[in-house]
Amino acid sequence: MKKVDLHVHTTASDGIFTPSEVVDWAVKKDLKAIAVTDHDTTLGIEEAIEKAKQYEDFLVVPGIELSSDYSGEEIHILGYFIDINNAALQEETRKLKESRQERGHKMVEKLIEIGIDISLDEVKKITDKGFIGRPHVARVLVEKGYVDNIQEAFDKYLGRGKRAYANRYKLNVYNSIDLIHQAGGVAVMAHPGIIKTQRIVREIKGLGLDGVEAVHSKHSKDEVKILCQLAEKYNLISTGGSDCHGVLIDGNPLLGEYYVDFKVVEDLRDKAEKIKQG
Ligand code: AMP
Ligand code: FE
Ligand code: FE
Ligand code: ZN
Image (cartoon, rainbow, N blue to C red; front, top):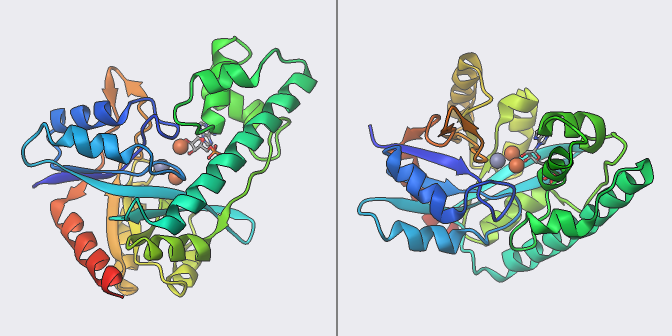
């Protein structure tokens, strides 16, 4: 089997590995392709594609993971084979980055109000290309000893409804799917098992969804099976990946531990061709 991992984060969003490091790891783990799917940004893709040229027979699929609102719930929509130079996509990702910076500022202010010694500069220092995510704020809180780990930072301060939580601008699911299509890409619902709602998959299918991510590090075997069946029932492409953010477990990243066959890349490419032709 030619293995591919179609859900990978880099330092361009909240991952720990640079795009180049991600490609090196992927080759080391005998993957034939990865999709770089950073949250709300495409700024890691060029470096990954450039790095991939060092290797024979290894492909980087340009992707994105758009945090989207669906009736007050946060749903993530993956885009595959997007044109990263598409004007609408660039404009929207610029707006998302700006709103992440504003939210970063708000979160830091709230933490200061609680009596925590933290500054926006400390957060910015560990980010890359202007992307501020809650994990960056969490890492500073861990570093400064306010919490023992990232999870505790979310549980105590940064999780939804917690004391330092702040909202930010998000696309709604329909706009996300539409934007991915405008950029010539294929729209896939990320980790549906986490939300555990088959109804939502059905409803979003009506909004133009092309696929569901069946294989994912947080899906149980049963969930994978159910999601594959669901994909078949609704004629959706089923995809999969690790959602690796670069955390090491005994020196080993999640990257490549959850994978699908290269055939899925071909299916996504064919679908993207059709979308590009309108
Ligand atoms: P943001 O998009 O900036 O709101 O941050 C969301 C990101 O934070 C997710 O993509 C995860 O990488 C991470 N995250 C969310 N909730 C948790 C949690 N409870 N523990 C650790 N990481 C989390
Ligand atoms: Fe993340
Ligand atoms: Fe996600
Ligand atoms: Zn992800």
